[in-house]
Image (tube, rainbow, N blue to C red):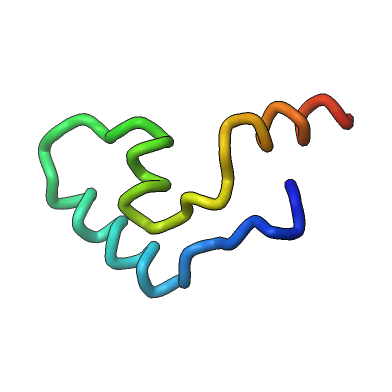
Length: 54
């Protein structure tokens, strides 16, 4: 991953997981989870680059 990737704060992730645990709906897509947590710095292209380096 690039150095510009910004992870959401731990307390936001915990709150999100608590809300998801109570929600009977299936989990959202990874893109929607990133959007909800404000983790928009990581783009799908970045993931492909990181995977190609191994």
